[in-house]
Amino acid sequence: MRRRDFITLLSGTAISWPLAARAQQHAKLPVVGFLSAASADLYVKFLGAFRRGLNEMGFVEGQNVVVEYRWANGHYDRLPDLAADLVRRQVTVMATSGTIAALTAKAATKTIPIVFTTGSDPVEVGLVASVGQPGGNVTGTTNLNMAVTSKRPELLHELLPKATAFALLVNPANAVVAEAETRAVQTAARTLGLQLHILQASTEAEIDSAVASLAQLRAGGLVISTGDAFFNSESAYLGAVTLRHAVPTIYHGRDFVAAGGLVGYGGSVVDSYHLAGIYAGRILTGEKPADLPVLQSTKVEMFINLKTAKAFGITIPLPLSGRADEVIE
Image (cartoon, rainbow, N blue to C red; front, side, top):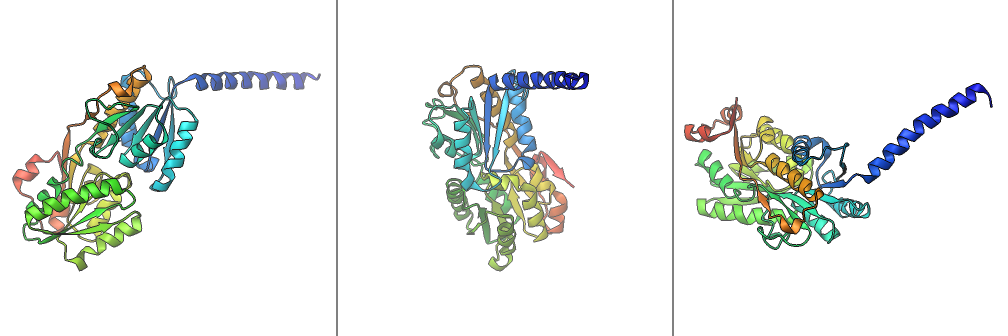
């Protein structure tokens, strides 16, 4: 064997052995399967909060735990196959983002522990038997987005007291959430003496069309469904579209308001992901989901875009702006 060939052989061996060793070590690490109906690029801050929760339980992604991500990118029909893939890979625990992903994961496995994040009532939608004793292989965290659904039309009506009709935008692909929010907002609208139009959208083009239709419907303002993963991932787009069509709109979260939306009001989604990360870490240490009561993030946030309000000729009452976590000017 020539000297150059011998050196090449040694070099190849030196490279391949560490790679093989790392692969073997990687295979022994616990695996968290992360399932979401949204897209990765728009969930950066939520994933950061989830990883922070894992870190607090002693787990660092890439060091002593592996996270396998599965994103449906707004195509809810892909979720069953994505969930089935994580089950085939026998992940240690499955973390789900949003109600529809959680329900899909629950249908896919009765044995792999599942930690959900949702704004819905987990008992009402069938995720757990009870909040205090979830039972089975499913537990998780909730935020107050659905719980304060009826408050959003009230706040919008406070800003638009002369309006006689509002609209509600829901995603028909997420029927469980859409139906629950429709009931809540319809009840609030009747109490306020308002007519309510139900609009539907599952794509950016449909969002634009729905928002543009408000002028023809003579609806004074728009409430957007907050429990939908697709809408969450399109938060900035929703803010920009409602500004472009000059539609006073209430949704939730800072991204929506920073992009031009009028008011954001709801539970802290980031906080619920942090708590979910902690629960995933606890399960990795050996705790059972049946023994972990569903946690509720009690943090409620309000953001107001004062520049948008001025552009729409809306005066924000001082008591309301004083309650806001941030007023964007």
